[in-house]
Length: 287
Ligand SMILES: Cc1cc2nc3c(=O)[nH]c(=O)nc-3n(C[C@H](O)[C@H](O)[C@H](O)COP(=O)(O)OP(=O)(O)OC[C@H]3O[C@@H](n4cnc5c(N)ncnc54)[C@H](O)[C@@H]3O)c2cc1C
Picture 1: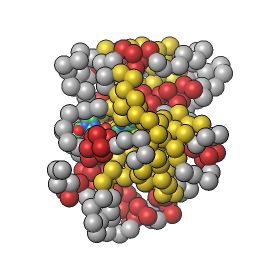
Picture 2: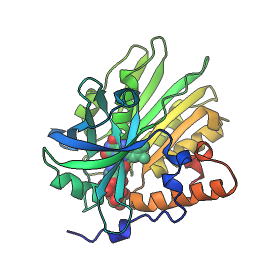
Picture 3: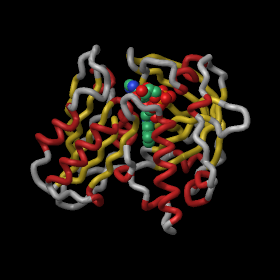
């Protein structure tokens, strides 16, 4: 077992446990019921969430922080995943893990997981849905780590809203599985199997080709550098922060623990200025 101590993120000011950060989230247990591999790039876990409040888990695009390793005397090592689908009757949920190389904390946890495995997680954290604004077109841009978020958003797509969505994945089947609500046009951005994720620039190129004026609101999630480029496209057309919901879900060559340290430092700086989590923008992280 690799030594994961360098993945610990210390929270010296206890900022993450405070009400401002936790909101209505709690620490709940999940039990793994089933592990499928619907496509070569994905492990799909069906889990039971042991919650007393299924309604809180029934909103689109909910994220959780799954505790994937324990280091004695320290905060657990955690990774963020999206609830792809949730059934409030049974409290069963699906979580898709994008498989990638290396002995990362999430991949190690996943390889050891079996039906019956339990874990703690913090959630539900409702994440962004597109901003539906009269007269504005909606662009959705996502790599495979954000396909579960897109699926959950499309499952609850409001009647009468229109959008264009660009999805980068090496797995055509993962794209084909997305729902097609009326009004949403989906475009597949194929990535060659041998090309590493986060290296093609295809999402940013799609954004650049499509967004040629300020009449858009943009929802995007994926590799951090791709997201930075998409923010630049927005800036070029005067699309301000209110018109953007853009989040870097991971960064090529950097562990999420390192991203979490940057996020925590940015959050602590905000708190020191007397402002809270609502003012923490992913765009403000220095990575
Ligand atoms: C709100 C939110 C929701 C998310 N939802 C999902 C989801 O539903 N499914 C999902 O799979 N991911 C999702 N992610 C992304 C996931 O948290 C990261 O991919 C995370 O880095 C995985 O942790 P790890 O321990 O495997 O790798 P880390 O320890 O974080 O990183 C180790 C190495 O692996 C690389 N790496 C990490 N992820 C990938 C990847 N996807 N492809 C290639 N290389 C990678 C890193 O660049 C780094 O070099 C989400 C992230 C956020 C912020």
